[in-house]
Length: 274
Image (cartoon, rainbow, N blue to C red; front, side, top):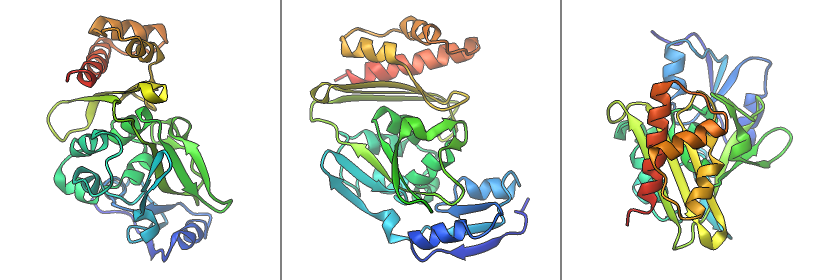
């Protein structure tokens, strides 16, 4: 199937992209890598009136270290992260996560900002970057703002963006040299959408510990009881993860309970495996 008829414009800069996205009352969408929007348009799940290409904008490809944060432009591709073309300030976590995403052809064009803005529950970056405590830099008609990723993704495919807003960068806290991280994804076969994702970051030098469950039916889920266990140096087995999820009211079927508990337990064990 081919997409419904749409208009196309190439933005000259971020301000131009914002102007174009807000230029009418229609349904307008920015286009970066197109790894999600393209298939959705072909299946007519999305039928934008105007597609605004932002892939070539230098401002969305910028990377800088600002104090305790690494600022990664929204247009940076998964492959650029996987290949180490940006500074490694997460002790290898971002490179590892990037290399787990789909297939190389997708990683060559898909962008970190596009993944965050699309907010697919089974995507890697919403879970991994939430565990890292990342923030989302947004620009729009009302000016620039920064939103914690935990407040940005509201539900499955639902984020805190107005129609003419655009994600410009991710602000990712640097990990201390002694920080530990774990990331475990369950897929039916390599490259497929995840059935469950467990992510943990433990950075005692910064007093920061986070355990996040992804690939649920909604936004990634913080699991504070397991973060407390990690902070206290306790072993976390599958039954412990099940109990923690049940205690905070997370409801899954038997299969979901099992795979989510396995992903969380293995992510935590992986963080301290060596």
